[in-house]
Length: 522
Ligand SMILES: Nc1ncnc2c1ncn2[C@@H]1O[C@H](COP(=O)(O)OP(=O)(O)O)[C@@H](O)[C@H]1O
Ligand SMILES: O=P(O)(O)OC[C@H](O)CO
Image 1 (cartoon, protein in one colour):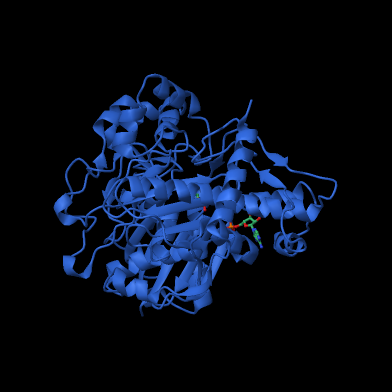
Image 2 (cartoon, protein in one colour):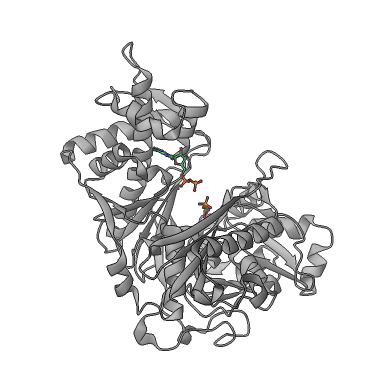
């Protein structure tokens, strides 16, 4: 008993991991997910494939762990965020493929909203900048383009959900249409201060309120999975978007704690406590996972404590926790480019040896703006540059500059966050916790610490996304007493201490900013 099952539904695959109560991985299973590209800029997933794949990996992980559903205290869901599904409440069938977060088809509507001057309203209510990344314009596209969808929605026959809602619906065989606050905060329709769907924004986007799921804290009693699915009913105790789940799994529970996930892109989140900081540096304000503390008494339940309009009764809720978020579009992807585009290496793991074969980048600076630059620059038209090349430049210098570019972009983001935090009366970030596929690269992590002038800390368990969901579920099931206990379970594997003098780091960041200006000029 006391084992926890995390369902981690990501963009490229569905995974399930069984953890023991100490947070060790007992077993896992994974299935790739088909990416559907109907047109340039459009990305879709098949919601039924998502569900079947997720269920299959959950069963497989249990089997590999040699456990039965009855040994699992609770399961937690964590998911690719913003990705949008509309389905029929009666048949349970999706009306269309899921529109994935990367999909840009909502851009014309976003441009219209910007032109009409709605950005300040949307930022103040949702904490977000207007972008087709978020769910709102994806829902609107489906209502406008799927034959009959708007009429069915008006009759209350359709349900909207991000992937967590879709999995909850399937796990409960239609008994529960719900989401958690972190996922709700990525729709561009949720008031992150009042914790409810925003009637003004729903009206502005012409989206019927009847589509929207109920919103619960990230750690709550979501009911039980249907017995036939895993062999016995399992309590669903945790739900969080994957980046917020990773923040939780890194035990970043208080203001000023931050994590960076180095995957294809990088996602940096800084906890800001109960303060929703409005960024002056184009960062996003988002809700961090809410967890009940032991002293709070009984947990909110899916079946009770609800306002009729699908909003939470604040009396039953833990107070909100917030984070600032920024993302780097090209992170580990620059290593893939070295491999597949330049053929400089055969496997990603070779990049460290190649980069280490030279003492530094030899004055070479790479800005990998392959698809524009994200926060804090927001330059969609920027394109990649490599500058500072001399007759002595080798492929090793290019590889080193490519790795360093991941750290430069992340440092620019973290410094912007620290400026926002300080302007709001808080403290700058004092240590960065890291995870994701590229955090295994010691050279990159050391350079990151050098640029930032703060320790970069890699945890013993780098499966932080899944661990966060497992911990949220474990709190709901009473496996843990509170976040203090979880903070005690979190272990560092290695701390990278900064070794560069602050002036040298500032000089390097100055060179980086000059290179960015070159990449964005003209
Ligand atoms: N040793 C390494 N050094 C730097 N980058 C690496 C290394 N190994 C893998 N990567 C990069 O990490 C990324 C994969 O990380 P992962 O967390 O699995 O990404 P995602 O979740 O976005 O699919 C790839 O872009 C890959 O190039
Ligand atoms: O599934 P991932 O790791 O690519 O994460 C996707 C993010 O949640 C998108 O916002």
